[in-house]
Image 1 (tube, rainbow, N blue to C red):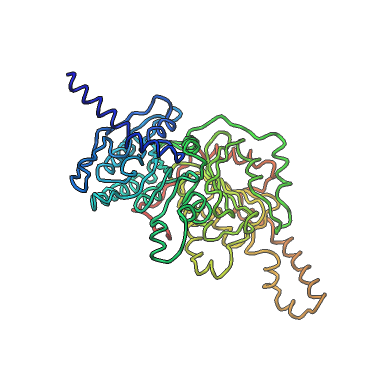
Image 2: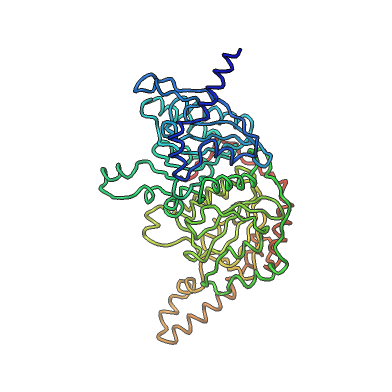
Length: 516
């Protein structure tokens, strides 16, 4: 019995030492926590339960037979976050650089299957150099097994990825399928091929940070959703995200105590949005005065800034928010903004988060680059996402809602449940100047000089007075009510309460065919 316990103690100790003291010290010197330290920081104290601590690889060549480390470079298990169960895995970069082999992959697959069966979120702490070359196709097969589970779990349980070190090649595709990616600034990196391969194939010179660092993916590619200053901040951010989400797609999101804005906030709304349709403003100011105080967690804040998306609470209820932002590109919808908003809408719909949409959009961004880049296809993604959603959907038109963008931004026609408008709302095919140039082209062509400009101004004024208002839409029931801006929070809260039990049946089908 003593011999058996001694062996158990040795293997337990070795599994906790990772790649050994030297590698651990070198890892920490880069500003990163070890895999176990990350899990300890993530879970509530004392709640982490490890599984598969004794698993090792089964390869007998390339020197691997002499380098067996219990755990095989990844720590897996489950614990609690704010008292709620969560599964997780943390790759250990001190063991084979965190490279994924067959046994490593099977540990991840097992904990993902546990998350599926238990109906709880799965969080991946990624720090991997990619496939373990010594294991050849077995490592590639391992990646395929992980990817397959990512797809099976998509929309079933929340999946979150933290990029806390270099992640190359196949290591980036699993995070790409998950719901949210959080990257640590200065240490997290993601790329299919590194700078050396880029240089040899294209001749381009680029650093790892510029190619696949946190800022590049937060502002240029849109691959990541959040950027954190350190491992600890990234782990705290994941805990905050989970607080908005249900454990799985069959549960409702957790309700928190309401945190109403100050009484003065409602009266300030009318002054935040300029009456002049072309004047910019930052929609964040509107959100701050409508949502619960401190509850708005913006997603992809650095990418496609012309649309704002994020998690928030309204009277304590978790919601998803989509809002045009006239402070960037006049709030137009372009390729990136459409894709950004569409995926977020689908995420909220999958996990029972009601959607609140604030509209101030002059249309889709014109231009050759946009047309040739597929704005038709990308814009259709957002249209499709709203039309497919069955969660409660509440829309407020603050100012402009022109052209096809009016339809796309959760209009009544796409299934909006409660569609409100401020008195300043302008709902039309286009703005007054553009409409006058088309409708009265002949009259304008006959006029000359100052007379022409005076005529144009008069006709635009008449058009604006008659057509650029919310009342024509309200007459037809496309808008449920025109409200005082000060009533916005109260009306949305009442609508959310009413729609909490919403049920929306759809025709049976295997799945739709979203224009990817």
